[in-house]
Length: 94
Image 1 (cartoon, rainbow, N blue to C red):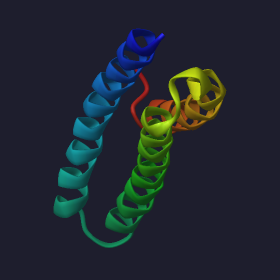
Image 2: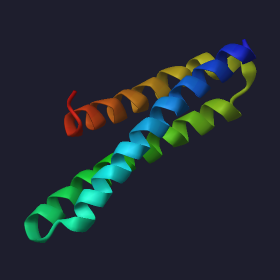
Image 3: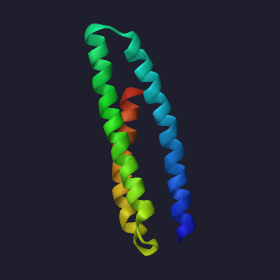
């Protein structure tokens, strides 16, 4: 059971690292922007970083949960992860 949790967390963290790179790219654009465009970038970046932090917090909760309780934390992690996914996809449509 523990290996399932660790594999799950590893998969989530890999995707989040990818998204963090996209957020950093957006920050670079914001740094070069001016006026209202800069404000719009900053607002989007703040939203993404907030959702990222929430997802990271849920992952930490999952890692600190008892081995037999991780399934109950998984739902909370997935909810937070999905919110981050939606925010990133809105910002970076494929």
